[in-house]
Length: 154
Image (cartoon, rainbow, N blue to C red):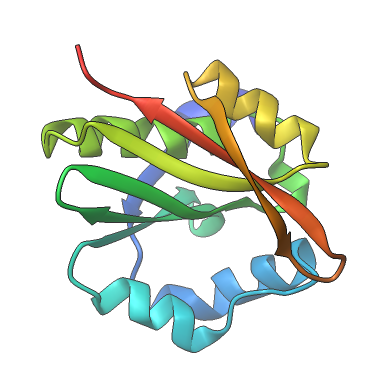
């Protein structure tokens, strides 16, 4: 259903009025979801670039990225469960890679649950490689975080 509509997905700036819809996706996606204040902080924080994936009038995914000097850090990428495995997360990641390249970032970092094989595969297809492990990085359940990096030097 969404595959045919992927060309209709628009990546746009996250706005304060988007947060209630984002929170509903966040709460059904994670055991330790971000709060409203965390999303609002990302919207207004210098160096932060939060985006939404909008299909028609609905938000189907979002990404939060921070930029510090010549590095980017992907903090959160989430797609509504009904729209997963349709290329939306990859679309969000690719849009952020292009954005960070424009700012001459040399690398983009992220953490992902060790057990999240689908996300790790998606990141690897986007050029990310494993660079380390953060022991017990996640809670509920406790789990290691795999640190991945995309080196963007030519």
